[in-house]
Image 1 (cartoon, rainbow, N blue to C red):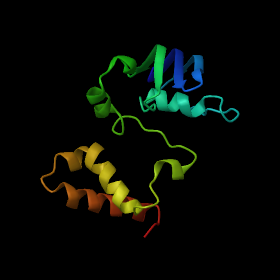
Image 2 (image 1 turned 45 degrees about the horizontal axis):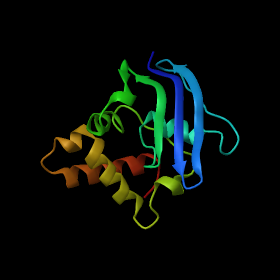
Image 3 (image 1 turned 120 degrees about the horizontal axis):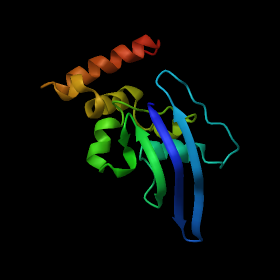
Length: 146
């Protein structure tokens, strides 16, 4: 089992009170499987994905449940431990790139910044900026973006 989400409950604390965003989400995902989350707006698809990666906003919290990734309970990890997994061993592609890409900065710059945080070849290089830039250019060429 690559990913097991079990009885996941997430709350948001707002000025109007507590919002119960997820109430008992459970699913399994084996290596090589693909899982699509479908539902109406506000049904919890994004909150589920953000919870798995521990990227919830400050006013949200995982109340209970387990998120087991490759045998590790992600709910129990520190942020530092989570950073070693996030972006290297797991990632999510969201529907709206405007939410996750900053239109003020060129995409190449954003790729370089991400590679400097998550790519082992870049992290272990003494020329991080140069190696990250070369990798970003190659990645953009692969998808035919100049």
